[in-house]
Length: 94
Image (cartoon, rainbow, N blue to C red):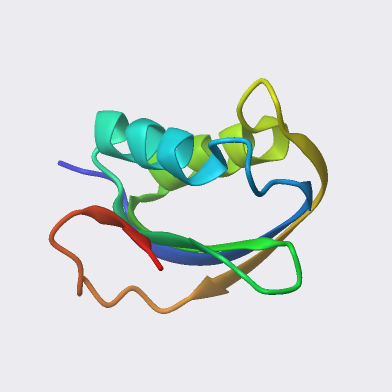
């Protein structure tokens, strides 16, 4: 049986735009079977919504604390929300 299904809303702060953060997060999420989206925010942060089994969502969150090689992550805010199952895949939003 799959683990508990969860939804997490993330805001990632630091040098996280222009460093392939979104593309790398999509790759990590797709590899783990996590659904949702990621986008740049005008204030320079990155926002993401993740849905999937708790252990896999938590793995993406752990990755977000490091980010890709060129990123410098200062802070990650995680808000747990009610699981909705509304996504078919993981996309980059513009």
